Length: 164
Image (cartoon, one colour):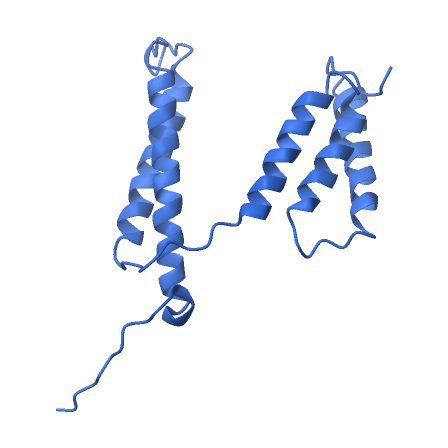
């Protein structure tokens, strides 16, 4: 019998893609599980009803339970390998997405859907270190134009499309 000496990897990068995936699964599972638990807690007073007579809490509870189960499955999958450290958190990307959501929420009623979509796309692009800044404004204008046409004119939602 041939004996093999295995050396434990020092980091996730040395451990290979399956190790990083396990750490990501664990982190995603914890996040989804906590989100599901929070949604179940927030909606605990909503009457659920039954499958034949659904109340206002039926669908939110079903989605929250699905998030919780998915999170638990990912935690179980990710727990098969114990990383020495958590995978790097993409702080720049998360900040860009949070900023985009915040700007959209603040601008959509004040400046209109078109301007809010422009700001949203530009802020989200800040989170991507490989963003091609010659193309981002073009994509932002196209996205904002399609959103304005679709929601303001085709679907005729009661949303202000243009700034006053």
